Image 1 (cartoon, helix red, strand yellow):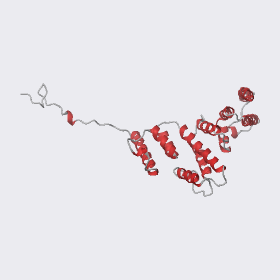
Image 2: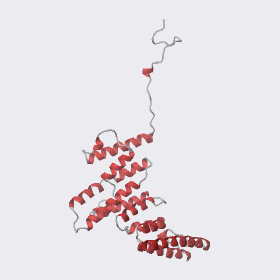
Image 3: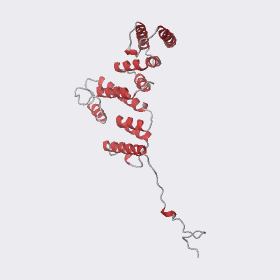
Image 4: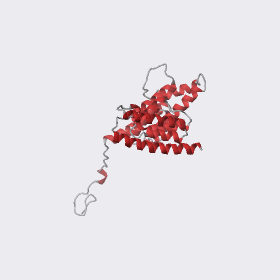
Length: 260
């Protein structure tokens, strides 16, 4: 007689209930899960009423949004890099905070104490590049943080400089001198386009003239670090001048069209 534990061949059946599903996690997956849980705990530490405390742990996209809203830019950037996400949303948010804070401080001789307290609250959640400087204002510290991030995270595409520039100019706020300097060295023509896009025509003309002077300077046998230009041969110089002539012509036509 065949028992319930035997199959048709008389062999004992495999105990299916005893088999277990084994899920193999790589170290990278564990690290990602850990950083999301850690970010969740940090958010709850700052605000116990935060809705992030209920339900499953938010995904990377949502978590970055929550961290940015809380001013935790260090952690937001860490998650973006770990999950291969773009950093533009983080820089756009910080740039807007810098503008609002600068405007708040400039509208009165003594900025609202609540505004400053809130600013220092989120600033202290990040690793400030100049810790312990009591003479630094909240606005100065915010700009320093933005400058530090640009220095560390920017690449040859100038995407982050572009993001910050668009945010500042769209708010009618002038670019800081340190940012103009780094943008010129990284991608001057992109800065020129942003000036033209936002009707900063005088700045566009000044930038173009500065570049022409720098280009001519390299032809005399000198480098020009301001625009990251190296000494060029006659052939290279001729090619650069042709390129510049084309860019200048396009810029000139755009300026004329905007002025009409």
